[in-house]
Length: 208
Image (cartoon, rainbow, N blue to C red; front, side):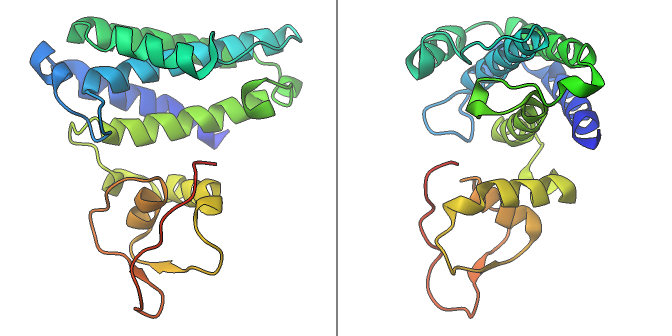
């Protein structure tokens, strides 16, 4: 399962990137408006925790909400955890990512199709979700890993996943990494143009 391998690699990469993060750096702004690096790291940790619960319940043939308290509960937990020391933020991300990998390791071959409440999907969909979050938010940390480092396979996947955001009939030209970044709502490194060279890039729709 290549996506699973990619997530493992992404978790390992993130752990290495965070080795040198100190408390001052954790308070600095991320690429996301209004979020520090501490917010992004708390979100990544809580996302892993939530996915682990989805997988563990699915193994038992049960369903559970993704976040306790829905979006409001999610936001409150992220805000409350964002100001923690860098060492605690890193430990949380690393340990909860490892717990998610352990949960996936317990899935039987026929268990990947088991339903989860997250997006009304399957256990297999939790792998894709984690792949998106780790790749995108590692770049959001502004710690040296950027969208230019995204693998072609991830860019292809992200373009397909975010395709509903682009107005019908619009064709954008440029580097694959920049197209993927733009469709994910992130700053591009290179230039993008609308096919034919006429007009500005369109406004994107809501996240799918």
